[in-house]
Image (tube, rainbow, N blue to C red):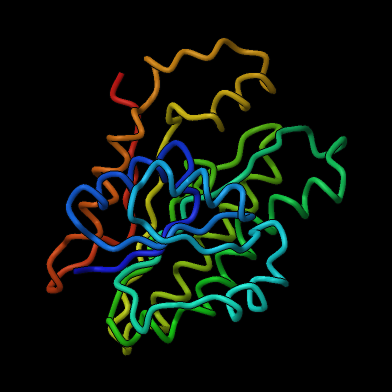
Length: 229
């Protein structure tokens, strides 16, 4: 039975991936920011285990995980969690920049560092769920896009570093996907939120599982997923 650690499993893409892996009998560790959120997430995936660690405070992740039981091996770490706040460069505060960089970039780097021993034992896989904003930046997306461009750099460097250890590293770049995050984006942009015009989270989950399940003789390093309508 494979064991996976997933961030962002409470909604959207992360929740869809967690459901799919749970349905096929894999063992799940779901990271939550606090005990209350952990209880909510676990209720949606019966039998899954939870860990508590706040991605908004990456300096504390090492301490948090050291007080919890981790498996001896991990077949994958799936970085799905993220936050977004839009605004022109001339108006974004340092606090807004730091918040997005911490959750979207520094926390995935730190969590990966802490879990590399278990990934190396299993010759496992790290999958970063990035964004189209990780490939090009548009007006008012500077802070979010910078964090996602950085996430691409993290994945590329990690891939080269861990190849000798048998750890595969992949990045998935979904386009606009129906989710609470996209509802927030549309409010900030002042546009109408129409989920029917976006990618279903289940479709992105299918793409992620395709990357995850690829036989060991091959690897999908970068995969872009775009709305089909």
